[in-house]
Image 1 (tube, one colour):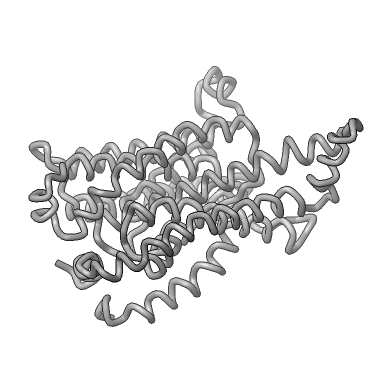
Image 2 (cartoon, one colour):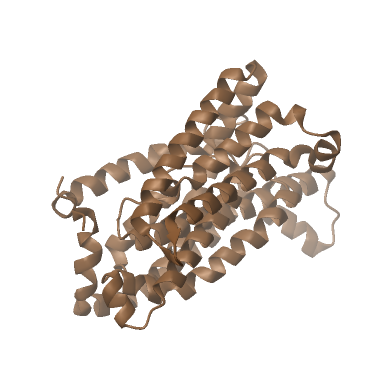
Length: 362
């Protein structure tokens, strides 16, 4: 057992500390729901144009007709962007919590098993070689060729990983980790070959896609990602008891009556679905899945019954707040959201490492 997993092995035994943290964890769910609501209002209010949801609501209540610009800005640009930010942030944070619980390692994140790299390879392939696709495919998918390729790349990587790590009906977490690292390296190498072949315009698209953005949010994209991400988020709470049991070790979890193989399979598939859909519509966004679950674990403990809903809310709030900063800091231009999450996440991650040196044996 690695030293990094010691936190997950010893903390669950602190029953009294857990009991004391439960009221705080429940209060945080309501507090974070209110925080998310406030940030959603900020997201709808602040932007390059001066359209305010309060002014629009006042007009609607008084029976006045909205201008074309107000309708477009609020309902066709800001609202789908806000919904996509909530979905992507929640998906990445919950995926990170699931991965950390599955691997019993506080430094695990959705990219650990290569899903993000596979989705990136799919997107890069579509950007560089999309012109070689059959005409009917290009016509049918249009601007959604890249998101579709990214989603298929993430799922294809996850399927290959699952087949490699599963033998005689049992999935090895250690094999999955090592195979995920290998597949991520392979996907990165293939992506490098494609990038080398790309022209200047394609390189620009690849650069901005790799840094992540919600700028391309539309209702069609939102409705494409919504069922996949919501299904993964809805499944996550049913895995909480199994992940809590795995924190005590697989043997102990088995004695508690937990179907370990089912928990592993469902966790991996949930991460693949949520991360694949999130990366497909927003590009590469780092640190959300790594930092959010760990910060919450320090605050409310490792009980996944409370950790998962709190992670969904905090991930959504963090990504939406970063998006508001991106849109306003250099308005009317905007920064890629991956830059802001890295600026916020890297110092927090360093603080986590310094604080956890004793646990991680650094």
